[in-house]
Image (cartoon, one colour):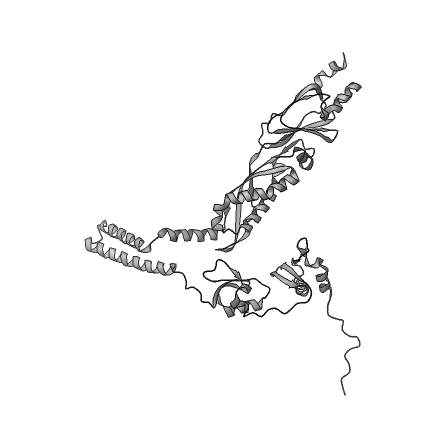
Length: 431
């Protein structure tokens, strides 16, 4: 019995993957102690790629097609070299099949509501959910960076990481768009395309994958905002109140005529008159409630900021600004397209004196009290007042926001204190 007769049962004639799952991305062919037949076949179907890993190193990547496995194939030539040594060892390597088709209908959703600024309702918290699609575009990179030696890698093992990146991109896109909650439902497709374009390069660079599609199925505002939207819709559905009142009065006449105990035609007319009178009262009340308040005068503004919300005079708003000059103070008047910062309005800017000049360089500051452009001493005062809070600063030349305590100029201001008291006690009193 020759060497070929002894190991004939160990030969692999065909290496292929017939995938019947919908979630398997990578599958390792069970080579184990078998040997590859010289002249055997490697079959790679459409939507697949095959990777040979020989002695721990990636040898070659095969796209769709049928390949003859022989000593001429560089990916496994080392195995056929073992013929010289009577096949003492089987092929020392692995064959991985990568699914390169699209994995569709992968679910995503915001785990917690996030806050956005709405032009009609102010700050609101919303949730969103939908689905997304991705595919492997660089099998070699995906195997090296993500799969490793996992012999059966599924979508559930990477979806969490992909969803985190996608949700972060979604939140940024919504906030950058400036679209209100009411109008977001008409922008699902545009937002989905923007997220796909923004996130796809990250998937490609880090994972060897492409994000091919993002769908937004729903964006939900909180219940109180939904109730306000429903109320506005109901008022619009009523239309002309006079016509509505006449319709109600006609119904009252018809109902009275059908009532045998209602006292005949006279009673019917009386009921109709009462119904009409009640309808007129309701009309007046509804008209009064639907009438918008008088537009504010030039000296009054709608205010929204750290000093509360409401309609105040210029002097009242100026008092709020002086009480918290580094806080947020926004105003609005009828006819304006949106809210403005107080210092953009000449009437208010003229009432509030400019801050005293500060020494040292200025930083953009973001912390528990809000955002402003402050000096090192002002920032040091805020850090000292709330040492456990998050105080971040930035100025031109920084590569990003930094903790205030990590900036030497501010740290020096924190470490400095009042000079020590003179020793020896107070000087003697004059005689």
